[in-house]
Length: 448
Image 1 (cartoon, one colour):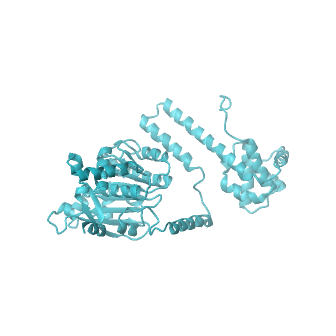
Image 2: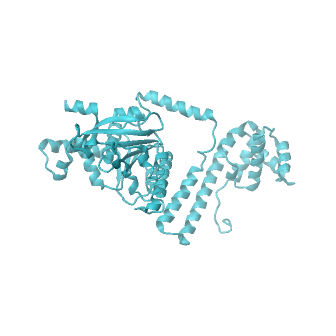
Image 3: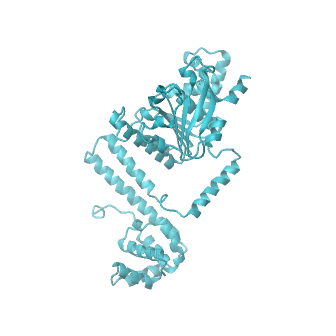
């Protein structure tokens, strides 16, 4: 049909024939070709049938040569009187198997182009048939493109010996770095020691009741990653504006109280400190989006265009739009919508290959307990966050609820879940004038 409409379908019959010819000339290349190519990536039906026959024979340990292949094609019902001549012609046109993988690459490239074309046609049909609101069509379009990307061969079963090499490469890289942790540092040493830093493809949830400092500790981490480790960080804020976030970052970087920045009442020295911090921050790789209607798909699409991205921070989960574009969930749909969002965030972390930090509100269960420290169970009414997350950190400050306590600035980062190791509590110090957290030891050093 496409050819009748004048569309040129992307495929290479010559490359398909050359791959088959290589496999018939030198069966030793069959294993490598099969790792790279699926049968459905062949466009010409006859070539696909020959490839499927060879692949099945190889899987059963049968000898592969022109005679045995013809015999098996008879058994499979895909033989006709022209088959022997066709295979002979393919072998005549393929003098060597040395370039088999290059031919396979051409086939794979053309198959990807066809998949993209199919998705483009489906999207066009959705647009002109009026299949839902624009946001829904956009969501569906991005989902279809994600599927194409995911099906490029990165998945599937893989022999453990190949995975083992990846593991040893990661170990060697970690050893060469000289760092005590494999991932990015949070800037809080005791927390790093417990969770081994922020690692690629991880979904890290920082959860607390309102006012405990979720945004502050997330910005703390983002600032450390960007300025100390010279990495690129994307921050999506659904609650605060870009200007509010930058004011907080500036307060922390300059060590000037945020209240002074908001009122402009600064000493000469504070102006100098703020100017120096502003220059340093401006040179850092921090990107901020404050669109309050963002979906995970929107964030994922933006992040895929950022070269060398290292960390994503999202503030916060309960304000995010679901895949259908709805917010302010009803009680009936809340759990389902949040489950969908948390699952998509985990998928995004895997696709991007970077850690994703997402802030989350806890339910009110803790407020009814005498010990108000967060528990993992406080997340359970929020969909599947608990199971999707690799690390869950609960924040607690006794001074927030009881200003008469012995140390109102004492804070705790409670690691409630950690796929890489143990759980436990890390003691921190809350510094309200800079809206930030310090490790206890560092704060004592600064004070002295």
